[in-house]
Image (tube, one colour):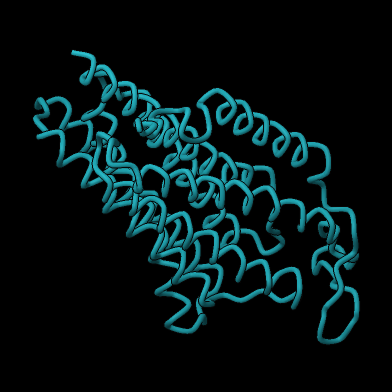
Amino acid sequence: MLRDKPKSGSSAGLPLAPVIAVGLGWFVLALMFFLLFGTPSVPEVDPATEQLILTPETGKATLGFPLWYTVGTYIFELAALFAASLLCFRNYQSPQVVSGRSVWLCFALGLLLYFLGDLVFGYYEVVLRSEQSVSIADFFYFGTYALLGVGMILAIASRRLTLDLWQWVLVAVVGLLGALFALWVNHAAAMANPSAPLLDRLVTAAYPLFDTALLIITTILLLAFWGGRFAQAWRLIAGGVLALYVADSYYQYASNAFKDYQSGSLTEVFFVLFPVLFAIGAAVEYELSNKSRRGIRRR
């Protein structure tokens, strides 16, 4: 009796085209949601005293986002993170993936940790209606940075990296600019809250440093995977990391520099773009890896 051979390639899982369509469609929906409804319109109430929070300069009630809008932003972020993590796990489970299974395991776990961090952060913000300077969510986020960095380093190492002098100069310039921005953000945070506890200051200072490290690694990744058949997948991954850098850097700056800054502003749509690009990049890598293996077997 003949046994059916297991199907490989895109037929074994989600095809590439629907992943791209759903991913881009999800981001467009998120962008429209942020644009149409992302205007503070509800007077904020202090959960402890149940009194309106007044703006010191005007004496008027501080406006915030309605609860349903905040919940909506979390739904867009969490769904994209969970889907991206699953697609990265699919790459890890595939023996045919070209760039190495350990790379995608790091990405999958990193996205999963960010998903858990958002759940914790959302619990404080939506359920408890409180703002925590430092919480367990921060340590989930730090784990994400570490795992994404390790995953990209493993991917770069597999390419036997050889960069020209001008490329190393570019990496150095990007690192210098990132470091200067990190110092600026930390200075703004220190000026805004000089009496903050030591742990708060350390956690606040760590985010720009992690962002800068990821920015440097991402620049090297882009240069290492600039050409070749699999370059498209890694450009998407690099784009996802850059989206995280933009969203997180602005959030860290604005939340420290502006006393009335509220989670849910337009720039936070990049927190949705970050996992969307990872999901599409994982699907592209999976598709190309399976096509490459089938081509080798035909020869």
